[in-house]
Image 1 (tube, one colour):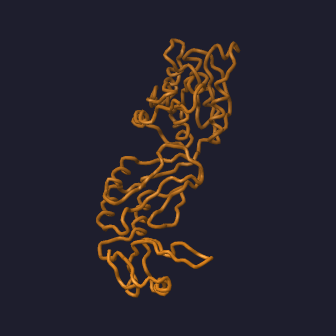
Image 2 (cartoon, helix red, strand yellow; image 1 turned 45 degrees about the vertical axis):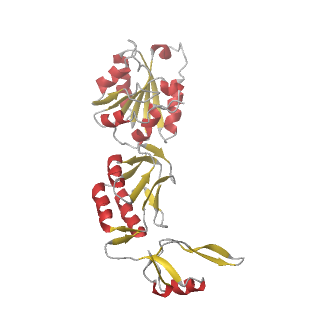
Image 3 (cartoon, helix red, strand yellow; image 1 turned 90 degrees about the horizontal axis):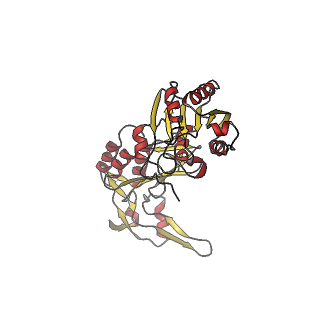
Length: 326
């Protein structure tokens, strides 16, 4: 930083805001910190009484904060997102549609581990609405060494750090288990709760079938619902460790791949996540979905609706932040 004559400041970067006051009309920063002085700015600055300015000199190998923010934005990806204009060295991203927001957290950490750069995001794996703010990025100083930006770009790799997947699975069938429900001995209060949760993501329930108890009965009900060609199948109840609760076994007989039976998430830890041969998700939902909110089902449903495959490793990682009790 150095003090120079205003007339010599063209091409230099202002180190602080320049406030202009016009009585009864205007009082605000006419030029912001980080502004690159142009020929047209000189008469205005002189009229404001600024005969000398504190500036950063733009030298070879240095990058202005606005240009640096653009380069950080390029690491993030913008599909289904909208960006702000760069302002005072910062750019923000917003959701352009409803969907699930995903973050490659390990690569994001690698980028933020580099000196004088930052990308801040909301938590990945969460449902977002159109217009929600997703991330912001900037460098810390007014100007940054080119080499530091290169290191951040190398840490990010070739793939975007962020993605927003819109909801594409729009229909569901529900298999409600339990002989007492099928016989009408107790009222089915579980299914309406699930249907309401599905509606939140624009998912239509095509049909509900009551299977009764038993592995074969539940499996046959799942097969029957599969003929309706829904985008997902949900089995409610029968997920605990009681001998009569055989829903996980029935799902295993139908599914091509069972990701997990059980999550490190409370409430709703006894969720089962599986996929049919054609990729259709099949979820087994425990009673905690009925009595509590949010639950493991609430955490999983946005990703299922967005057709974002769920891995065993991701299920294990849900333990961090997985205690949802109030």
